[in-house]
Length: 603
Image (cartoon, rainbow, N blue to C red; front, side):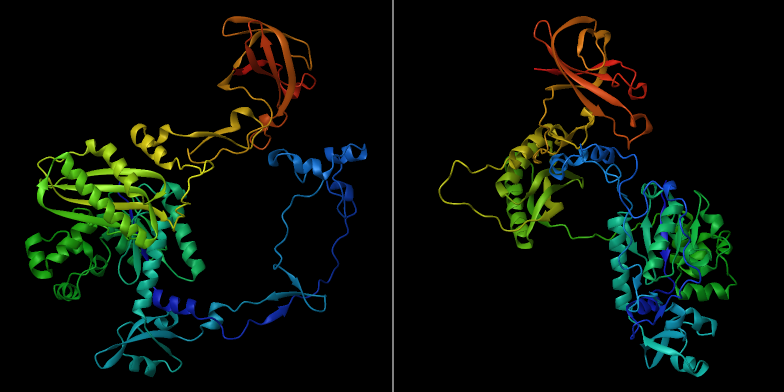
């Protein structure tokens, strides 16, 4: 389902001028009046978990330890991992965020609070404002503020006539280049943050292709509301319409009279039937001819034959009508945030042998490396496009785990994948494009004498292995800040150095999910099991070590609020060593049901 949106900024020129101007004098500062009555006195300070004046929270574990003389020192707390340090609430202190330092600043006399009274828009712009441009020998109004429109001033009116009608009129020069530059910046922002396909749709709006993107913002309606709120914070008034075609969205955004218009699938013809013909983006000559024939609404064109309609109003009118109703496609030419580096070689004669293709690829890589070096960039993804004689394009892409412009490395990776290229009847042109690149400055060449301590870069090896086996087949295991063992490991890219490995012993092989043990015989609460059954095999324990207690992560869900695991390292007859745990501490029933699980195998 194809969904497009049209954004309309009716007062772009005026509001951009207002946004750029700032008040010449600082805003007047007014003092907040003193309260008539003093704040109420807290007669029941014990009702709050934090006593008046600060101090320790009653019942805190760390407060009790301090009272008993067992409170750890600050150095002991700093030595703990970040995820095991006690929180501020556990330490008995409040954890609420601090107030903004500039939210309320006391006055010099210390009796009142200074609050800046920001000037409103009406206080700054209480005069009607118009923008004019020079056309031939006279000044013509190109834009007018809402106050000027209420007074009868319209775009296209002569500036001298407007001054005669309104004595307090403010006249400014129009800046169409600045308005276009702002729309271009807004389109680039949309392509980076909202939807990858966005373009400018004239001097007062944008087009967005929302197909497959609105679910990221909570739906079409929420996306439109967030977009209008963003523009409102910038000081712009906007309307937006979402439909299945660009012509319908463009018409509804400008003539529906609503801030947000969401149109269902297949309702384009019915939605624009009652709109004026200007909603179809017709030429001025076509509008004049339509008025001569008595055509006012879009619905008046539905019943007319195509031939007479094209002769009277032009072929462009028929195209606009078909585009609005969905019978004719209308493409969106998206803006590109950055110009991707690109080099091209056009051949005098088609080539098809592996040797000639490899030779042309090598020349393209040399040209691309020189281009990247000039711009200070490094390639992360390089796309090869080969134009065949029959008009079909063959594409071949390689990726790098780190930004590079090493010509030998790029040629080697293309050689590994060149077998996937089908030359067909011959290739007449080849292009290299870098869609994903990163800044890459100068690199040190190293000393003349090789030393044993020099570290070799494994990025080329990672790229070659990834080209053969796939990028997802290469990874490293690293630790994550979590006490729960199955959550303490994660996959990281192969060039990331693992950090934060725990100092305590862990099994080499950890099961994906803990498996239940049966027929367990163990003394409670702190003894390892003496006998258990796992995977239909009975094991007799000859040695054990533990327990190592692991608490649940209470912030995830309520089930882990009091959950406890006691882990044991045991050795069975025959030399097998296991890592198993018991749910619960053996004292409080709320910590677990005392069931046993196998979680890992040593060796």
